[in-house]
Amino acid sequence: MTKLVHFELTASDAEMTARFYSDILGWTAGPSPHVPNYMLLSGNDGATGAVMSDRYQSQPAILWFEVADIDFVLSSIAKNGGKQQGDINTIPGQGRVVYASDPNGTIFGLKQPK
Image 1 (cartoon, helix red, strand yellow):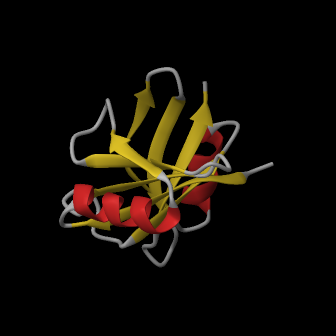
Image 2 (spheres, rainbow, N blue to C red):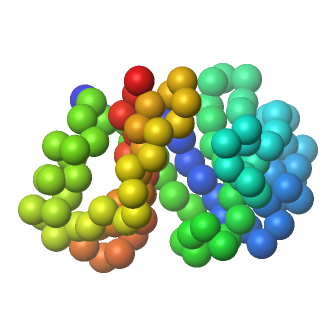
C-alpha cells in the first residue's frame, strides 16, 4: 500500500525558510548531505520534510509517496496521462526516488525504499 512519507517546500532562501518552520514547529533543520540548498526538517513524531531552493522546482509544495516498485508505478502513471519528471536517482542508504506529474502537471515524488 502506498503511503505519504515526506513533503518538500520550495523557497528562494531555503535555509531561512527551514529556520522559520523549525522555530514555529519545534522541529530540527539541517542541510542535506546529498543535495546543496536542501534543508531537511524532522519532527519529534517522526514526520520528515525539507525546504529546497526554488531553482530545483517551482511548485510551492510537493508530496512524496512510498511505493514498492518505482518502475511499475511510473508505467501506470504514463498509462493514466501523467509523466515522469527527470531521472530516477538513488539516495545512499535510503532507496530510489523520482519526480512525476499528474495529468494537470502537479508534481509529486515517488520513493522506493532500499
